[in-house]
Length: 298
Ligand SMILES: [Zn+2]
Image (cartoon, rainbow, N blue to C red; front, side):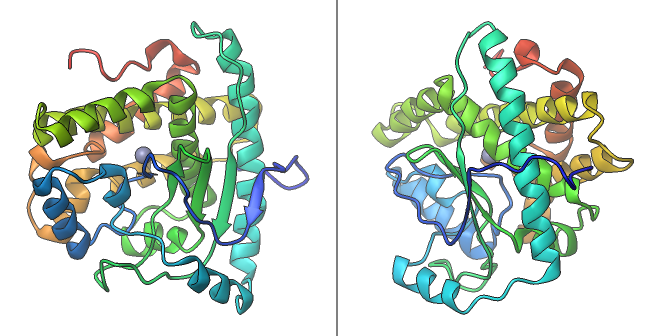
């Protein structure tokens, strides 16, 4: 991605973030969903009172005090400095994409820019040591994307995504997709279904299908951003395949194979590798909201 010398978003918070939302967090999927996370996830699912968004991604934030302490001793590496640079430019591209597309879409909605809080470093989670990296997530309550820069290493080295800046652009464009879903009311609709699960009027398995559609929609929206960037000549050779590779390694089937050795489609909540790639591609090809209804047929 060509980013040097280009506009950087002013909505980046370079600090440890905290999520104040009562509405739960929406993760990318695969962000540290280890065995511990799966077990806790299943437990909470069985209890029926859990908030899916708080556990997908397999981690919770540590107490605020601990975060502050880590920040004060933190030294930035050259790789992280570069990550900060192009992610700030990518966020600016995301802002430009949606402030142009949303008012012209069938929804005629003004775009309200989200914040992006960046923090770095491993965080010990309540789920223990299975995989302590906190995955990226979007918090509807404060309309902020939270990203741990070390997720780049998780994505490429641990999950095996192709190396390159655009893997991370896919990640934040997906999270920004959840912001668009929040502005357009889709997140709220999913939360209503989540409450039905809590009340016992919808099964977890059925809800999971809606969750998959919701996440695939965010992948579609990430594709729309990539198209916007391509039309302006910001993409470089390999960028799209980096995004496709990242979409593949965070697929539910890939994650389940990696962590539990088998695949259970009833528990999918983000979609398979193939689905995630497919919807990213559809968004890229459409370049607008015309084909974004992933809920069709549910
Ligand atoms: Zn997501």
